[in-house]
Image (tube, rainbow, N blue to C red; front, side):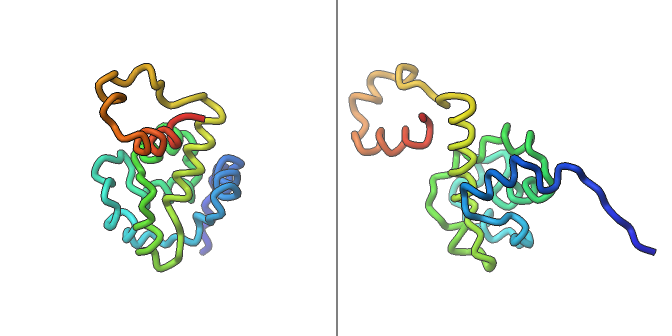
Length: 135
């Protein structure tokens, strides 16, 4: 007996778009969890890197878009260096951020930051940090 699972969201246009701009293929991931295990900030994510990739595989677009993971990722590429399939969750997160910024506007406002922080933070840290939060 053959069981056929159907899910109209698998291979959704959103997932195809993220894969196209990230250069990654979510289906290559076999969920070993090395990316999440090596991620220095996964404890702050509501869905770790492997979970986000799994959500892409099963077409859970809304769940992916409302996750904080893309904003927490620091882009250190530990996920890529540990992945036996050479899938970069960091590249996927960067693409998710870009998509969110293109559709929703900026994620944060400079005016919302405390003046003391802006005064004392290294300029490079501010520029690099805001690169991922504003379009």
